[in-house]
Length: 366
Length: 262
Image 1 (cartoon, chains in turn red, orange):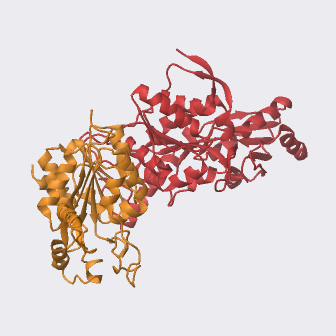
Image 2: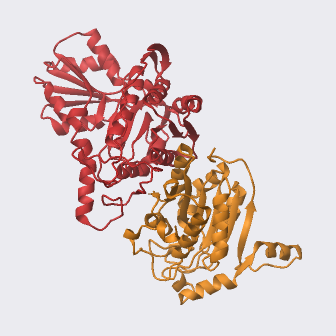
Image 3: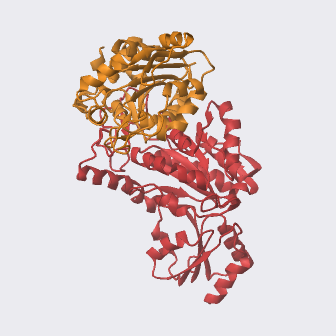
């Protein structure tokens, strides 16, 4: 039965994962994401799942990838320092096309930074942090409800694309408490099974191969080395490497127009806010306080792959205002795709922008 | 079935150098797996990075060739998510004891039901012969050109102290003993650790007075001393020369274990 609860963002994330079918959590305590691990430790054993606290974040993501190869839906949750440690194995998950969900409840960096305060400083690390060329999917929740909903969505996308999917939350949304509607059933997208007789890394038109889970007798070899469609290492063929990397990037980038997820308000506006995560709440307050058809809002729920075509939905846009809890990471991406003015509104230190600060920028542009 | 049925014939020839000891240990492992009667579809080989870690690529079961040092963490995830699977981890001295040292001690502490075969060649072979945590004092490598000045790790001592249920050491000379030890490891619930010293003529042997492949194997033969004999010598107050290799079974016990098939 659909139920309404008042809960914390991190708890809602864990509940979303369980609803989506997650049955393996490997993690390591780190502020401000720890409540996700704690809630999974409480809930998973009662649901026939596995919770394990690993010795560090490198081991956590490794265990998650291992579990995923048995067919389990698996996740981890962390914050900046742990996220940095996970980078090598995230690249391994990309290369081996292993579905998994990685939650980053972002805090102030670099280094140990501000463990208890909010930031969005890992948005480019999430996109580019592991070595080599690749592409990923990243969602960014702006409410406790979305901590639930977008975690479900993250699992579905991970299964569909056989890719790591990031839930790039922030401390504010992770620790916020709000009303959440938890439905009886959530949409579920299982990974496409391997068809015996095919090859384990041969993909069809969607560029995603069927998944040959361990223990089914397929005898599949999985390696982070450049591999052929059999999964066998072949690290010296330029053509094979190029084809593989282009397929891995293409399966995500090629779908960006169809999978992108955003809210659009006032598409005829000349001044348009672009936001994701906690700063979206300030933008919503500005629009609440100053209802004006000429102020638009593009709220990205999916940040990566960046679907530049949604910018064109604002046909009269003169300027994009981009408030972020970093020095302008996604603003840089927007600049790449538009000839309109892009106004970066950076905020460091953990506080949100105030509605007054953001409205002053609109006034200045008028 | 025979050991050969466990090999991916279409991946041969392998990449190991002429005279390498890895093939011997892989053969002993497959022989043990064959003797215990595991089914191929229920068996997974896992490895990290390095010469030894290429072994699963030649074995016809499901196999996961992971990142450097992390094989045990990946294997932990597989085993906990599906305890029905039998898991053997191939690793090397650099993979296990240097970059993967933290995962090693925690896998022993958890006593997770894996069998780990460590092919210890005392050198980084894949990258061309750099010193490793098990390069002996004075041993020559490209990064210890004046002789290693660091004491080597005792991997079996480490595994025993950290809580593994079964710990044994042999060498590529001791084929029958090694096979028996691996078989015992496979049978034993919990974390089983079997270290095998292996000759590396290309990168260790030729820099360290072993001009021929057989010279290092001869050395393994003449410089091993059984743990029982070493214990008797210690009781009598006799000195055990530091270059001697302690071989045999260090521990076999029944601590609480994780991931054991229900």
